[in-house]
Length: 187
Image 1 (cartoon, one colour):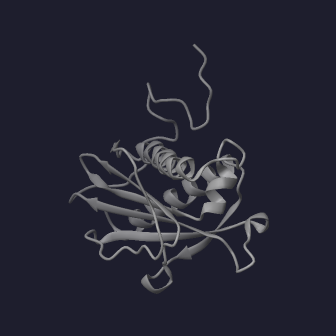
Image 2 (image 1 turned 135 degrees about the vertical axis):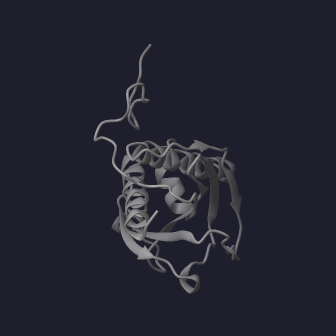
């Protein structure tokens, strides 16, 4: 995978992140890639892994409690345990969107079960993958704290097999693909 394909893969991650939070009623703006110095994790973390023949890695979602509460289906009346579980569900939903998007480029992945953590001063100490990016998103005006803007982070890590390519196979999902995100299926 060359650098332009890696950039395209990260564009997919950013667009899927925006779409997920929009579907949950929170507008987010892309705020760029975080550096080690500006990537504190004083919030809730959810990590979900994925693997496939050509691509494997993880997606980490860091979200402030206020954002988790604003996006929770209960309308904000969730307990701390519910919010921790919700962070895991958001990471699952996000990776599901990424999975559907990259399938159009011939990459097929399977997802693991998310793990969730909550604490103070959490940091990622090392990255084994040479392909990683920590994307920051600021929340809209309705979700600002007195101390400043709320920031979400989506960290995407990928180990890419030699020869893997990100080449569009079609604009339409392959036959037999699951419905789109958020579709209701009655049976």
